[in-house]
Image (cartoon, rainbow, N blue to C red):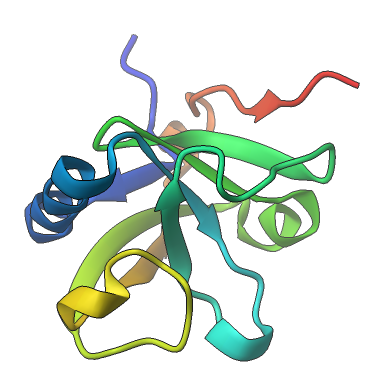
Length: 126
C-alpha cells in the first residue's frame, strides 16, 4: 500500500534546496506559526533550529526533515502541504532569503482514502 505524504515539494523549490545544500550541508525545515514571518516554511542548517517536545516531524522533503509545532499541526492535520518557492525576500533567517527567494506553503484537504493511509508522524522522545 502506498502511503500518503503529509508534505511534498515542487521541483522548483527542490532545486533551491539543492543549491542551499551545496553551500550549507544538511538542512531542515520548520513551519513557522505566524508572528513576524507569517506562516512561512523556514529552512535552516540541520540543528540550527532546536526542535523539542512541542514539535512533530510530519515528513521529509528533498532529504530534509520537516517539522512544525504540535499546536499548529492540529490546525493542519487534515491537509497535505506542498512547499514551493517564489521570488521576493521574506523577513526571516531562512537560508533562501539571500537568494532573493522565499519558500511558501500551499495546502489542500486529503481525500477520504488518503486520510486512511497517511505517513507516520515522528515525535521526540521525552
